[in-house]
Length: 132
Image (cartoon, rainbow, N blue to C red; front, side, top):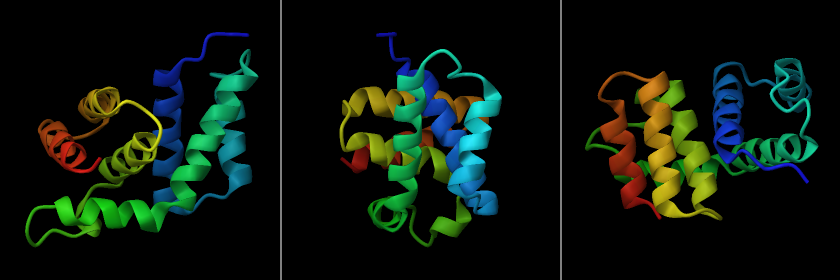
């Protein structure tokens, strides 16, 4: 059995959820994205885990949004978040169901620093610390 790279799975899941939020891509398009990327070319287990994370996040979208909403700044709505910030939050909330909270938050913060505005990581960190 190959080693599972959770960091890679998490990042690809966030990108796929981001695509879903932007264009409402379907499962076939998500599968094509994952297969064309070749990231999981030699590891079927990682591909399976990534698909499960994506599907779980999308399937529980309304539930996770309802967990996020109470922790937004006063007067803010989900629509005010960038799609990437929302994708990171959604995947992180999904991970909080099964993974270590501090690891999930740290990874979400790192991905926020990579993909979002400079100070967004503080916002993501605050919300995730209050959820869970």
